Image (cartoon, rainbow, N blue to C red; front, side, top):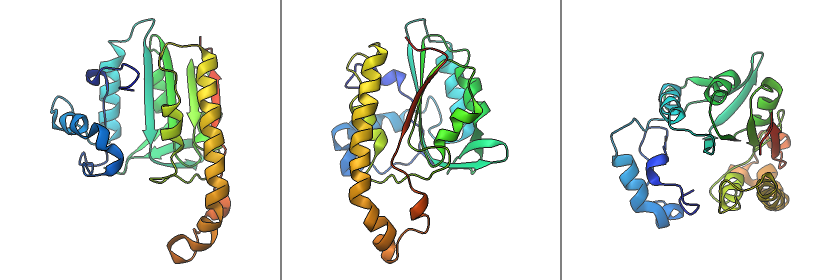
Length: 221
């Protein structure tokens, strides 16, 4: 997002206990910016549902007709009789599809929702009456594998158009490129996941899927 001209003051970062590992090599290029962000005490960085909703309300007031709003969620996803939900690893509370709907429905400009979790495609079964581009890391009935090397989200955002106000077509191309890379990773990683992960294979290996989903709901110019 920074490479695409988004000002740091317009980026809000919530992380589990608000204590990310700043020695992580993957963030080396932006370590100073991340350190400054988590030193900023103007909002709580703890990844709770309450904090997320509070920040979204602050952002909502700033949005204009030409704004792009990105809501990016990486967490554990579940589905129960009420639909899709994501668990906060900080306080173990849940945010549900209708909570996400409420955060997005009155925003001016264009909404982008990315959900990197198992069963995230189920969100599309729950919500169909808001205007938003939805990208999910997994179908509604499948788990997904994400790790430090295999990250669909990292691929997707690295392929987004340099101009975030670009056409719908360029966003679709970004998704297609990331999906192809993710599927290739899956082909290479499946044997390890099924047989060798932690010495005995992943117990849910047969439910893991490598087919992210993209859908535009309600129009996206």
